[in-house]
Image 1 (cartoon, helix red, strand yellow):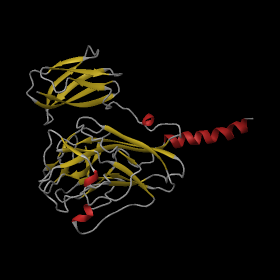
Image 2 (cartoon, one colour):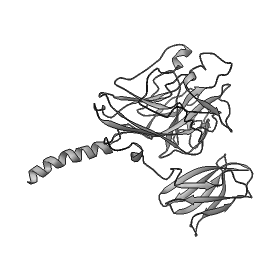
Image 3 (tube, one colour):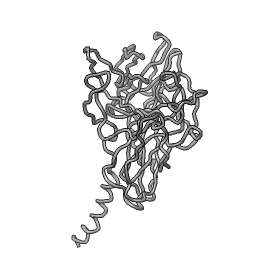
Image 4 (cartoon, helix red, strand yellow):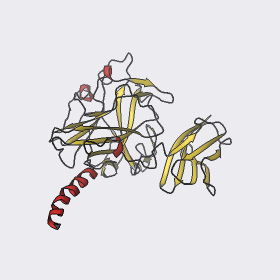
Amino acid sequence: MKKLFLIFLFPLLLLTSLQAQNLVPNPSFEDYYLISSPICDTDVACSDWYSPTDGSPDYFSTHSICIDTVGGYCNTDGIPQNFIGYQYPRTGNAYRGLGVKCICGSDTTPSCVNYREYIQAKLLDSLRKGVKYCVSFYISLADSAAYASDGIAAYFSDNAVSHFGTTEMYFDTLNYIPQVHNPHGNIITDKQNWTLISGSFIANGGEQYITIGNFWDDANTETMWVAGGMKKGTTPFSYFYIDDVSVSIVSEEESCASTAINKINNKDLIIIFPNPATSEIQVIGNQLTVNGIDIFDMLGERVYSAPLTDNRSPIIINISAIPPGMYFLQIKTQSGVGVRKFIKE
């Protein structure tokens, strides 16, 4: 009887193990290696992930403080402040960034039309035929992006996809049909929080590579102008930060949304109201005990700090003494630290 029990128990344990396993290597981009760069003697690059085209996706890390040839520091790809905006990782110390569309207007040069950036990685194991997989990752629109977009997706393939060459056309859109994508018309405008993109699909079997980016051309990518953006060089653009990529087996009955991990920086757990605000803000820590609050300006200078002896929700903070502008609220809780942006009018 004991042997029979073990025979039935082993497949159950194996299925549980497979369902819990994330098949994405370096899923939150924490692992890195040292490289030389054109402007710095030493910089860092993301392990396991690379660009499959001549586009130039970015890597942002707390370790990315490169030293130039005269001994200065150029923290263009740092965290939270970088050349494209100000954002903390959803988890860990790093994230990636992709340009998903240029807004050309009258400019029809190949360097702008259908320009795309992608990241690609080889999975830890091939996908199994007929098995359902949940795919999820988080995105945040960069502060400097003048336009929001709906164009972000994940494509799975048996072999690595690539498109390299010597002309601008090799920055072009990869012409593949992604298995999981943000719904068309669902334009992601949030620059403060991380937005979950998720979906499930049945594998054909043998898929070994994941590629993330925008697989639709300009005519089929919807965009919307958003306040607070600026131009990158001379061309308005749409650009997303990306963090926490996951690919895992789920049962046929299980929904992909139910497998998403809600951590402290889930926007539903910490709420700031009102936002924008003029004289005071209320901090609501749903399911969390808030132990301390700091406020930083855009330059990273602390303008407010207070431990809390009364942490009953909501917590009211008087901001009348700080000048108008964008600020970052750092909330210390029993589960860790969360960060939220708010605007003082």
